[in-house]
Length: 336
Image 1: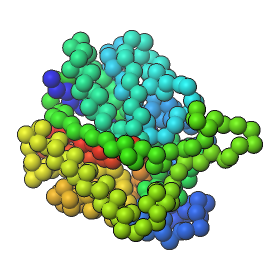
Image 2: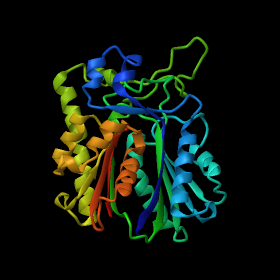
Image 3: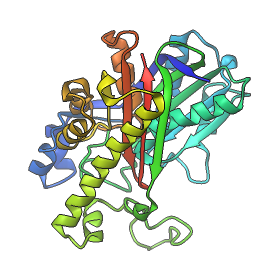
Image 4: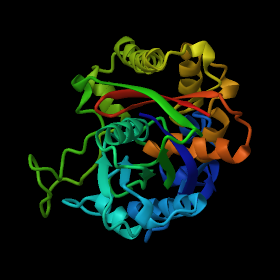
């Protein structure tokens, strides 16, 4: 069983220069500018996650020349919370796309979800031999009421969604293998303490806020060596995920033509590329700096950009790799 990607669609918020808006988010301007991002994308206040996802999915179906009735499966990967709680965003997007019979699957693993979604596609294709066509969408809409898109993390978050049409047996951008692993010891990082069953929202209660990078440092008692070791572990396990996915695909890192990582800051992206052994010029470094981090949607955005450029040639191997809160690490290998 294999499948390939045949068409893409994207939707983005308004593109703004980081240097022009950074002061709206933090007083620590030089630190944020030092991450190396030039722009981010911000959606309007009336634009939700499912709006972006539906727009990208509609564009992908149109590019593939398909109708809603042709789709058997929708996989939606999200980073932030959607418009509502107790609500299935994947089902909502399926309805927006006019899918009346297709199965809808929600992947909610933070930034890594855009990579694990490929494994979800492979699994559904393997266990449902009647499935021929799927739409995979990854979307991020920063919930600014709960956290700071420029100040919570060392990645600067953008709003947008990217979609691809996956067809069983297609020879273009063929999925070869995936690897994923989880270490729940870090599950509390970047959680929001208020709003769940343990501490529901309440009038006059604490102001809801997502834990940020400073909370991660507090976990390690602000010990520089321990914090550095954790950062190195993130990079090492990302590289290990690529190695294991390559092994499953029967290839090596030396065979890779492209490496698509999270749209991370310049230092992290460069370090991870070095660990994998792919020159940084063949990564998404420049695209990341120009567009910001779209959470789970990074990899589909970059694949769509490469597809549009026409630069990859048949047989080029591309590795997708990511880490995400949980903590999860994952990689997928595709053949152009």
